Image 1: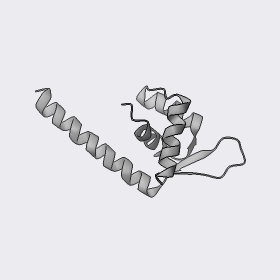
Image 2 (image 1 turned 135 degrees about the vertical axis):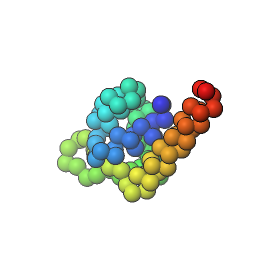
Image 3 (image 1 turned 90 degrees about the vertical axis):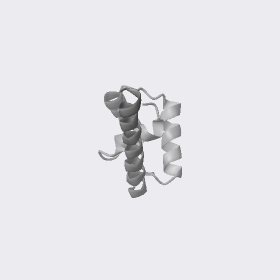
Amino acid sequence: MSDARLLVLASLCDGPRHGYSIQSDIEAFATVRLGPGTLYGAINSLERDGLIDALPTADRRRPYRLTSPGRDHLCARLRELDRIRARTAAVRLA
């Protein structure tokens, strides 16, 4: 899986994280290492679309959290991927 936006949303479903923590989490659960440009491009895009929010911080690290529309979007994408997986397994791998 290499959809950076989906991976960021999946990482944030456990709670708020800052960029490096998101990157490390994605690497752990998806065995994909997103480069900084890809990671922050996805974060900026998700924030612009209202799917994640940046939280206030006194630290230089900015945490992000999943919004309600972000959670809905993630669930819809996961259902879509599950339908694709089921069809592929039933039709193409039989």
